[in-house]
Length: 477
Ligand code: HEM
Ligand code: HEM
Ligand SMILES: *[C@@H]1O[C@H](CO)[C@@H](O)[C@H](O)[C@H]1NC(C)=O
Ligand SMILES: *[C@@H]1O[C@H](CO)[C@@H](O)[C@H](O)[C@H]1NC(C)=O
Ligand SMILES: *[C@@H]1O[C@H](CO)[C@@H](O)[C@H](O)[C@H]1NC(C)=O
Ligand SMILES: *[C@@H]1O[C@H](CO)[C@@H](O)[C@H](O)[C@H]1NC(C)=O
Ligand SMILES: *[C@@H]1O[C@H](CO)[C@@H](O)[C@H](O)[C@H]1NC(C)=O
Image (cartoon, rainbow, N blue to C red; front, top):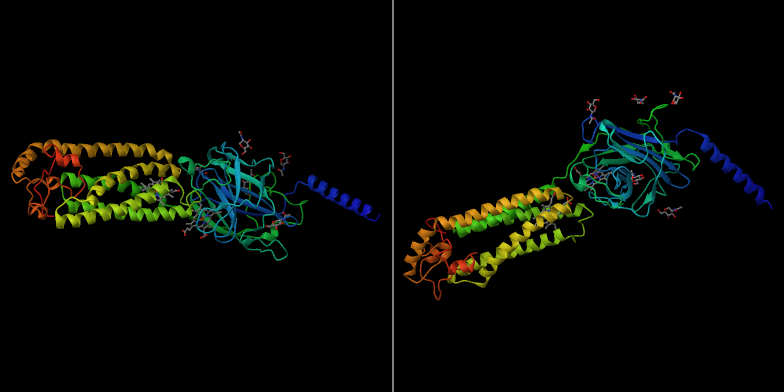
């Protein structure tokens, strides 16, 4: 029975070890990075960004303390010099707004890091100050604080941290904070480990002396305590380089949204209106081509943005599907318009293509206008929906007044023209009766008074005494 005294010895040793750890008040060995916000690119006050690290070599457990001004939607630190393949500790306020959620993640590139479920993390309560795992929003003290351990966290997909004899004294590290602001996306409060993040408002790199952060085993490992001196709850730089973070901002979603709204709420309806009021096909075509060009650019932007975020990279959201269908419909609409126009020029007859063009156009505009609020909700900016609806309603009022105002004002004149043109039994509503342009240079064959070149509702061509053919002298197309 040799093993019994041996086991007893081990037990005694480990008990001794544990009890010394319990009685000692000294902080675990740690490297501490701090960045104090001088130039205002880490939002929300005068608090520093802090990341303190301790690693248990025996278990590969990684203990961290992290804090940042509470004006940021999230805070994060990762192993590595770039986002790609970096293992990141990302923390944000929990759903009740006063706790903290820690989400271990890995990024594949310049895109939102994804929750990495193979590494498990737990919050650790150390007692204060500063308080563990809390978001405080009180004036200049406002900050979020995290104390946690991530188990077996020095190896992950496509990466590892050396914590052996050859551990680095200048391990490359990255850190970043998310922008604060309005709307659920930039005012993040969630218990979901995969919660959507808005791209950083500032990011930077630094190096850490890993050798200074190593504990041999659990007896000395733990969350690093403040190292700012006795009775001082602040962390100060130790075993880490300084950093000069860069301010950053992702303008793409806003540009995408703005250009799309501009196109569907103003440009396409304007193109339709020009056709009805000025009756110039060429103006209509030019304006809609400009709109189409803008939508092409904004769609490309939408695709780039989609790839950057987890919520959109699979292209399965209603907003994206409607958007892509609308884009395809717009290409058809363009083709239909051009084809119909060419046939009409040659044969002076209505075509099915023209008819489809006439109905597809307003449908596309309608769905485009509807897709924007879906986009606002999708981007986490639902507070923009009400202002958007107000603008759309104003736009509709302006549209209706121009469209029907023109009708009323020019009714008499058109009736006269109508009478004149009735003489030769031909009317060509969208250019007005008795045409002067190339379209009406001669009576169209087999054509009984139903103008059909460009979008114009059929009932209007039939009742064109009421509907308003042009108020202007018709220019040559
Ligand atoms: C929504 C999530 C994120 C997106 C969409 C994103 C996107 C990007 C983009 C586009 C760049 C290049 C910026 C430029 O060239 O000016 C970049 C760089 C950087 N990001 Fe992120 N990022 C995200 C989250 C994070 C997180 C959580 C961290 C840190 C923990 C981080 C740290 C960095 C760093 C250090 C750089 C510069 C080094 C590099 O190029 O990888 N990012 N990010
Ligand atoms: C009718 C066409 C479209 C309209 C009117 C439209 C409009 C909008 C609007 C207003 C936003 C909100 C922007 C913000 O609040 O920052 C948005 C967001 C977005 N759109 Fe579109 N969009 C259209 C088509 C598309 C297409 C074709 C795609 C890509 C396939 C796309 C992808 C996105 C994505 C990913 C977002 C969210 C951005 C984020 O996560 O911050 N959209 N869109
Ligand atoms: C908020 O949630 C955290 C967990 O995320 C919890 O620890 C904390 O006690 C909660 N606070 C309140 C006031 O409910
Ligand atoms: C930061 O500190 C300065 C000087 O102490 C103070 O004037 C300023 O109001 C503080 N800013 C915030 C957001 O607390
Ligand atoms: C630690 O994680 C690695 C993979 O990253 C795994 O092979 C190993 O078994 C884990 N060790 C423990 C003690 O869980
Ligand atoms: C704590 O230490 C920091 C940095 O060493 C110092 O600026 C601060 O005044 C100290 N605070 C207290 C309460 O002693
Ligand atoms: C730290 O604070 C404790 C109690 O508040 C006090 O007894 C002790 O003397 C202080 N130590 C120093 C170095 O100020």
